[in-house]
Structures are given as C-alpha cells and as structure tokens.
Length: 217
Ligand code: TMP
Image 1: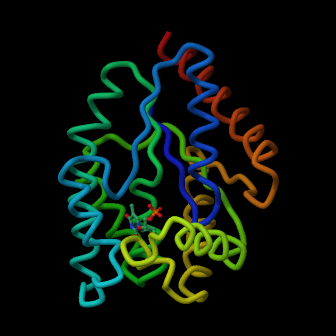
Image 2: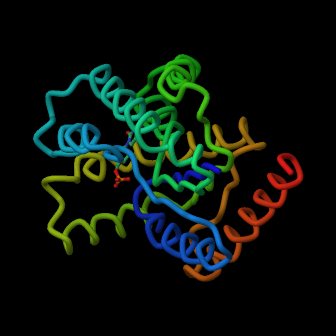
C-alpha cells in the first residue's frame, strides 16, 4: 500500500508520519518512509538544486522537469519495489505537490501536469493521500522557525521564501485538487494538537486498510 502526505510548509507532516509509522508497525505492518524531492540517490542531488536559495535562475519549466525526474526515479527505485514487497510505503509529498505548487502556485496548467505526472508515476498513484490543511500564516511561521533552528534556511529555504500570496494560492489549490479527487485525498485540519490530528489520520488509514483487505482478500 502506498500512502502520501501533502500540505503547505509547516503543517506537521513529519510528526504525523512518525506517529503513523509507529502505529502501523505496532499492528504488524512493514513500513518504509520516504520523501520528495530526494527519495533516491539521484533525487538527493536534484533536491539540492531544487531547494537551495541560490537557484534563483531556475526557470519554471526546468523546476517542473526536475521534480518529475526525481519522481520517476523515486517510483522505479523505491516506491514500486516496496509496494511489490507488500510493505506500506509512506511518502512525505508526491505527485500532488507538482500539480499544486507548479500548477495552482506557479500558474502551469493542472491538467497538463496531471498528464506529465502520469508518465512519471507510471501507474503508481497513491492508494490514500492525507492533506494536512492549515492557514498559510501559521504554517509559514512554523516552517521558518524550524529552518532557522536547524540552520537550513540557505540549503532548503527557497519555497519558504516565497510570498504569502504564493502560499495562499498553494493552500487553496490543494483544497480544490482534493475536492476533485475526494476518492483518494482526505483533508485533515492541521490546526489542532498533534494527537488530535493523528486520531483523524489513524481512522482514515485503518478504514483504507480494511477496504484493501476486502478488495484483495
Ligand atoms: P519540504 O521537503 O520542506 O516539504 O520541501 C519541498 C519543497 O518543494 C516544498 O516547498 C514544496 C516543493 N515541491 C514542489 O514545488 N513540487 C513538487 O513536486 C514537490 C515534490 C515539492
């Protein structure tokens, strides 16, 4: 099974992925956690280019194709093998990030991005996507504090440095995209305590796992 987490910066994806991993392992699943960009060896190199503050000269198209290249390698080398081995693989961001950041955020056509993503994922769309939703003002403040504390502003801060309008477009884009794909994407209010957020996520994941057993025996 393949589960992805999405959301703007500072929604607490990392904390929730840790909680979900611990819970799933406790009930006997083998879990692998990964991320985009940077879930493969080649992807780690692409991540440096994509997130470094110095990449100010990157064109929108170049950015798009680097995310897609990262994804194609990630799916082939990490995600598909894990799913084939019967594991639950959880990715911090995946194809929806491209549709929302490069599409709703940067202004590229979401429909075209969906088609390009189809090439990159070659059939491996997630079974379930958890969208953590929060006001951009709150999320950005959290993300900036984290980057400063971990001294990551220069190496990882290119998107956090975008305007509040950009992040507001991204947040609204996520909600629009989630409504169009409500069979796969569930929206969880991330402006709650970590435990409250996790209770909602756990219920959705358990429901999805049960459905999977009914379908696949
Ligand atoms: P993160 O690791 O802190 O989530 O940072 C990844 C950044 O890259 C985040 O700001 C969103 C952005 N991004 C895109 O713009 N498009 C994509 O396809 C992906 C995977 C991430």
